[in-house]
Image (cartoon, rainbow, N blue to C red; front, top):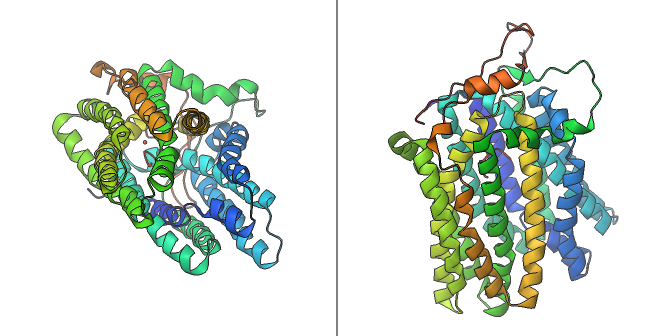
Length: 446
């Protein structure tokens, strides 16, 4: 299916930044350890503190993004991340690199990523019509999994030869290329109209969560997604500790244990639109949503040696295949149920909640692993995941019947177009993609 040249540029921008991020995967801890000689606690605090602080800073970002054209926001966030990442090698060459700067760059990167995700998701809803969203989200999903499978090995090779800072440079350049890609997009842009009072009120900060709460399907998808992703992520560091620390698995086998299954995410993303076309969006989402919660318990049977690595590969491949199918459907449903002029706030609320939940569960599971063992903590996350399918929207009647209700709840957004094109009057409704009755990540653009 052809989605147009503008989508192609947006997809290309996402692809280059996704590969840049994955090439630099693990660079910050390595810089902290090898360059700054930080203590283990300081290294572990990098991710936890950056997520916590960015979550607080990101609270007003939803309303801020909502009232601005989305392309300039995406370009600005890419340039902010480029400058922040590029400052690290520059400071290193000048002998000024510090742990404080590393932490500040991590916070800026996470915050800018939240704003970029909100803007790009809202813009995708306008750029692509409703019947094409599943295909668009599947392409983003597949690209993300390919980046995950190929980026870290390439980054590891670069780190081995040149050191961790070279991957930071690659990541910085990827943001610059992403900004150039977004700059090439042509077509309409949108900014929600401001109310009579331009002042940001306290209640505006919670508007995204309020909208999610009012929609039963969105509320269930929200709870399911943050619980599932949080529990899955809580087990990832422990699996690394188990394989590398307890079982002394060779580094190359460890890389294969996570690289090979990621390719199945690409396969799942390619299958997702076809399965939806044949069996319907709701049925495929429920089936894969249940299956992805069932497979992680298999990690509790990981044993030393090659058999343990094979177990991880099989379990992760089955899990990631289901995620590759499920994520584009869930991301599409989320966008379809959210009006374009509320998408930025909803996606910001989603990102903040997801990041906060992951940080809390990763910390909690680290404590559990210390009190028990990594394998027992991994098994507990697998057991709890078995309960997450009950949060899914099992009733199919709520699907495909929201276009009129959504538009009646909120006023239409103002449409902005580039100079030289027809400008829609503010009182005219903007285009909202149609929702077909039968038809998140990387579930959404980063």
